[in-house]
Length: 265
Image (tube, rainbow, N blue to C red; front, side, top):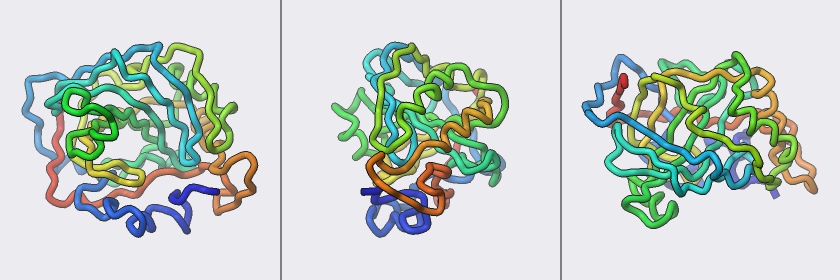
């Protein structure tokens, strides 16, 4: 069995609305951010975060990407555009078949090589991430653009595990301490808006915070992402990407009537 949704010609984003009605909504993500059109976020609350470095549970191959689950207790994200405190649930990544595209959000139409997502849920208001995901302020996702450059040492702790999860549904524990705060760019402003999950069911439950400044990762690290397979080990599978996860980003959707705000932090 393959994913009932994916990024190929037969099950890609252009088909998602047939099976996931929320994907046709008016507050979908990602979007193209045009800095000339954004408004300034007026807040005296600085965005701040704290992560426990020992709280990683396991890394898995979902068939669409790699994902690291986190035991969120002890982590926190608050301030900035957020009215509540959020805790980290997982982080994952999106990329493309080449280094000139791969990010989901774009700036003035420009793609980056990839985009890291740190997914948090509103623990102050809701009792579980499932309940939170049914509400417009339920989740907050930090988006970090990736650009080719020097090796990212913290992310390499994740990359070193990828050879153990080459096939869909494989997973393993990460035995090293990983500090998610080291994924975030220093002294970067950000854009924020209300949108959706970028993968099915595409629920419109996300406060997005997209950092302006990208972080560097090596070409070898990006290639390790693309070597993941989208099918289970016991399966035989072939698509236009020969069963590899070469591309897993959703194209941008209309901003519509939404406001995109900028914080220069």
